[in-house]
Image (tube, rainbow, N blue to C red; front, top):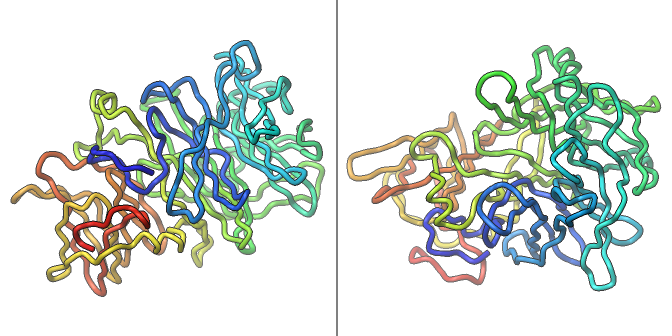
Length: 432
């Protein structure tokens, strides 16, 4: 992706060429390249008029913008937006499954777009799964498809009677989803995990096998009572397919990320068996160092970025966590100088890894603002305003906006290494 003069713009992460970006969609590998799509408003850096943007890469390092994949069509099933979904391999080609919304009323249904002779996606005129006509079911959205023991299943996020849920479908025919019931509800998950699970609506469900366990990711929000809250929960457990309607049995529940700035992750099972994950990192809205005012966003002309590609793994106790994919080693440029384990830098993109605790701050003269600190060994990736930190048992995603003369300071202990991060083939840093 081309860097610009915006100090806060990521250099090597996927972001839209302009406008608004949110949820990752359509992740996959086909035609010899990696593909990541995303919710996109091409007209302004604000939420609305949702299309699917599209980027592709030969190596998970260098990303190229592709033509728009999906767009709202006035007077059709997706006049109100082509919302989140996934890419699936189907009959030797690729299909895009998305939430088609006709208007602002609860009308979301699953639509299937297929590639035409010219390689573009042709959006349909009918729904594969209309909005469920069932008592208490609202806000159905975000289809995901998987195959278990030769049987193709679909899931969607939903709210049922004011609580989050995941609905499950038989998808023997990709164009005709047959509802089977609920895979899991927030109340059931709380009973199984021993603690109440949050969420009035569950979004972007992702159901994947990791090793010998199943992991269900759900993004959730609460708005009805008190301040808005958002999060992503990773449920680890068993998938019971013994009955007509599959059920998820929770054995462990934990936040997928410890930071405030990751939402709506999408998972993809690669050919080598790894489960890769991208998430959406919105513009910060918290502390002074982690907030981007609306006027600044408007002036920059872009909002939102996708996280780096990560691998979803399990800790020894069964908690689902993410770590950077191995391919990102290809971004490492020249070493950055460390003085007694301390790095001070104005580099817009860099990495620090240490065998002991790490503290990241912004400094301006003698003023120092602590941004993040680890409890032990850690790897920290910074790209413009996006900070992604990885410890053995958790990740943390933060948006951080250096102001004025502020520069980065990283204190690390133990064995420490620090490098510039840059896309292969692009201009070398002064540190190289």
